[in-house]
Every structure is written in C-alpha cells, then in structure tokens.
Image 1 (cartoon, one colour):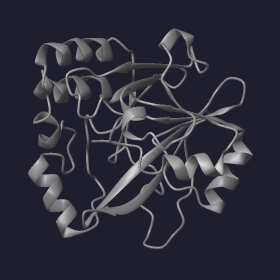
Image 2 (image 1 turned 120 degrees about the horizontal axis):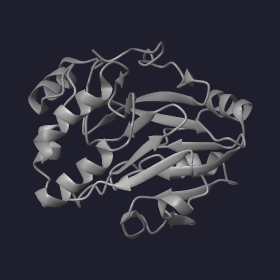
Image 3 (image 1 turned 60 degrees about the vertical axis):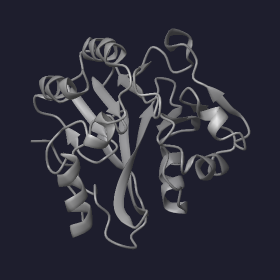
Length: 241
C-alpha cells in the first residue's frame, strides 16, 4: 500500500501548508471542487543543489505557504506539467514574480494570456538538470503530460497518468474514484485510458519511464508510494500499452 505522510488531507478551511518528504523534497496538498466534485491536487517542491526551488503543478499560494517556501530557498522555476494541470499557475507566478514559468508542450497555445510562459527545455539543457529529468508521455495529446524523475531522492513525479485516491472525502469523490478504478489502488484511470490515441507511442513512453531507477512515486491525486513502487507502476501502466 502507498505510504502516507502527515498533513496530506487538510481539514476544511485549514490553509495549505508544506510537508517534508525528504531533505530535498516537499509537497503541499490543496482541496477544491471541479464541476461540483471535491478533489485534491499535490504540488511537489524540489530544492535544487544550489538551494533554488522548483515547483511542480502549483497550488494556490497562501501567505503561510509562501513563507514556508521562502524559508527553504528562492522559487526559481514553476512547472505546469500537462495541458490539464495549470489552473493555479497564474496565482503561483504572482506570488513569485522572479520565477521562470514552464509549461508542457501545447500549453502556451492553450493559455496565451500567461505572460512569460516558456516551453520546457530539452532535459539535458534544463537549468534544473541533472537533479531532475523529464519526458513527454506520448500518445495522449489531450493532456501531453510530462513525467519527472528526481535523481537525488529516486522519486518519480506524476500528474494524472496514474492515480490512487486514498483520501477522497465525500461519497461523490469515493464513487468517482471507484468508477474510474483508482479508489485506494494505483491505476491508470479509465478517463485517461479513454484518451490514448497512439498505443505504440504510449508503449515507448512507458519503456522510457521504467528505465528510471525510481523507488518512490508522488501522485498529484493523491498518494505517495514508497513500497514496491517500480513494480507497482509497471503493472499499472500496462493498461495504457
């Protein structure tokens, strides 16, 4: 079963705060509603070797959360990892105007009003390399999700590709998680499976992802896997191949 970290689910009305996973890796979980459904989404935070911070899939930045981040270091890079995880990008950019904004392929066309949004650089040339590596998961153009590997902590960071809803608070959310196949189990949601347009491209992306020697998985929705992580991901990804 996925490991659990304190504070993953914030009580109603409690500000989003940062929680440590390792010395260089933190997360913050935000609960909100989408089309009437209560969901949560994780922002992952990496402290790079020089002390700068890299934010993945940003959430709203409260004063308390901003203060916590500033204590860790300077936020230099903010990444919207897919064409579907960008809702709070402008809010995060306003909180950290000195940071550079990067988006998944196709996001600039979808969000032209986001001034300064850049396409992700080639992995080896990125300013956060070699601590972080990334790849586009091909075959699902609706999302164009990018998958990430943090080498120092051996952590894989995913957005929507795989999910495990451990903390669905309402009966509607639990029902949705069961219907999509992700209630308390790691799986590619049925909603994501239906979006695959090129199985051969997806298989190539799976092979590339599994070549990373990750031992932990951070899921935006909404668990952290720390036991048998690599084998669990390999099993779950078969549904997309």
